[in-house]
Every structure is written in C-alpha cells, then in structure tokens.
Image (tube, rainbow, N blue to C red; front, side, top):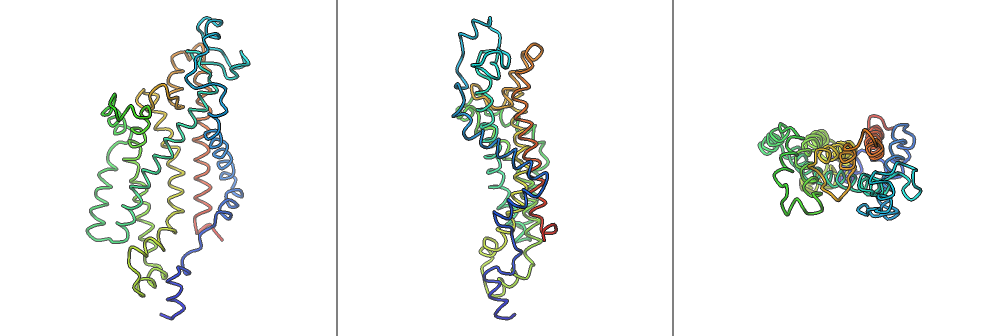
Length: 312
C-alpha cells in the first residue's frame, strides 16, 4: 500500500462522500415528498416549541363563565371569539389544549427515539464489527426481543407501573417513553449491523487496519459517520410509529395521564361526546394526522437523498 493510500486511510479520505447539511436540505427541497414532509414537520415543530407560550389559556384552565352561560355544554368552534376552536366538556380551551398536546406527543416520540438509538446503535455496531460469538449472542437477544408483540408489551409495561411514583412522574411521560423504546430498538440494531458488515471491508477501513488504527477508533471515526444517514432515516420512520403508539395508549387510558393533554388523550376524552360534539375528536385528530404524514414523507425524502445509489 502506498503512502498516499495510507494517508487516505488515516483521514478517511477514501470514505464515501456524505452530504453536508446544506446539500441535505437542498436535496430534500428538490424531493417532492421530502419537501412537503419537511414543511409539515417544521411547522408542527415550531408549534410545539412556541405554541404553548402563545396559547390564550392554560391547558387546565376552566372557563366557568362560558360553562354557566352555555348550560354546562362545550362551545363549538367559532361560537365564541374567546375560544376559536371551542371548548371541551369541562370548558377548557381546545386551541390551548391542542397546542400543548402537539408538544407532548412530539416530545414522547423524539425522546423514545433517543432511547431506541441509544440501545440499538451500539448493539448493532458491536455485533457487526466484532462478529463471532459476540455477534451471535447479541443477534439472538435481538431476535428474542423482536418476538414480543410491541403494543401488548407496552400495555403490560404501563399497567405494571400504574399508580406508582414512577408512573406519576411527569404524568406518565417517562413510563410511556421507556415502554416505546425498550422494544423498538431491534430495527435500528439490525440496520446498523447490516451497514457495518457492508462497510467494514471497504478499502479505507482495510487501510486504517493496515496502519494499526485500533478497531474501536475505526468504528468511531470511519464507520459511525457513514452509518448516521441510515440511522436518521430509521429515526424519521420511527417517530410516526411512536406518536401513533402513544396516541393508542392514551386512547386506551394507559398513556399520558391527566391533566397533561397529549393528542391521543384529547381524542379519547372527546369520544365521550362525539355524537353531539364531533369537534372534540376532529380537532386533535388533525394535528395527529399531520404529524404522521409529515414524518412519513420526510423519511421518504431522507431515504432517497441519503441513499448513495441515488446520489450523483
């Protein structure tokens, strides 16, 4: 191996070119589905960050005057300028509750992805790099975890901690986030292992080995950066699944506990009066659908932009 090749191995110059932030954004904006998904996710993210601060009321605040004037019935949208989206059955402002609900649902989904990547990435990377018995052991553990029905496990998990101090922390937020992450990491682990197996025999990796670079350093410096594109795509695909799982749990009364208003919780409470006041279900369902569609389209765009076979 020449000096130039050894130098390239040291710096990782032979590694596949990864799109920079500007290139990635430009690629997404040029991708029809990715552009739509990026806009939807950006708008919903801004609402989640600043929306609750701009909300006209607290999500817990009762408008007793409107309740008495309307004879204990919820206000319909645009029925009262003080409540543009109406109120729920307890005369709480729906606009304020939806804005808080978007933040909570997004927070649950994103932190669940941190748990998923935190478990799946090191397991997949170590299994793919070292191979042998360690790989067999880690992959068999992954296979066992993958056999558990995810929703059933999460329901059992939340029931196990129901009405405990741990469950009451942040109104059940921690229990739901950990429950979602404890099984969903298997997809990331398998994906990362496959990518490491594909990359570890590339010339720039072999060159780094030849000059005595430690294996863990090669894994960290050369392989991990090239894995992140696949991980980002997996996370963007996992966010809508986590949002839907949280909504399902809240709909069943096992997710985020009152008074915190996740979107699933708002839909569940709205079903109590859906026949007479369908807006109680429709209003929180709209941002939930937008989040699911937005992240799905964004994941589509990221997959196409980051796929080296589709890049020029």
